[in-house]
Length: 258
Image (cartoon, rainbow, N blue to C red; front, side, top):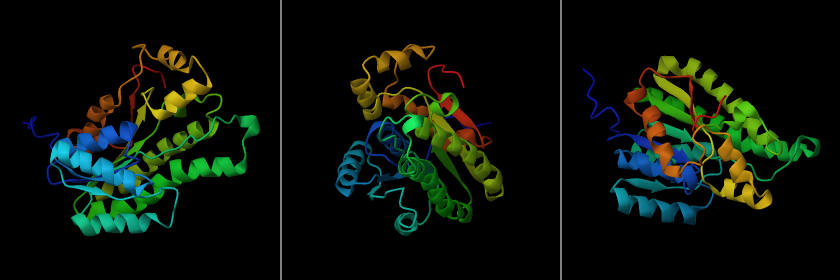
């Protein structure tokens, strides 16, 4: 019989969440800590990582490491991963959450520089991070990688073409990783949020009044989610509750259609 009380327990596990100093990233890393994991808080700014890590440590009592990492820096990622391994000895969960959609650029005005900037963070970053973490998971008996996508990967949209395309590529990459690393007992899944309250949404509303109403109408539930509502889904994919789930994409979108 399944031990339901303990299936979500992450005690003794080590979890990295990139882009975890604000928004859903902050909610996820705090939720993983509440579930018993030692966690790594990471974003581009060390002072912000330090502050958030201290807050989570006080709130949860978890062992929290704060370390800045720019996931668009291909050569910098190995050092980041090595330092996490040196601190904790192993890595069990990786949530590739860091992502950018820096400006609202349409297809007609797309530049190669902008396109490559978005893809370097949204696709190449998760690829490089996962490449370095997966063997560490393998050597410790397995693990779970969760790539954070978006429902825009399925629908596209004006002014978000690079963002949507990069996340569509990430969902496809997720399936390739899952197939390749299944023999290592490393599960790889995507989690695709719909509209969550964030700085990105607030910025879009400021540029295009009515944007919040537009994305709200795209959901069955007719609302925008609070960041805390991402915690349950990420705990499911990170924990043994999803032990037979890999290569999948779980939408958390209030009923948006893929």
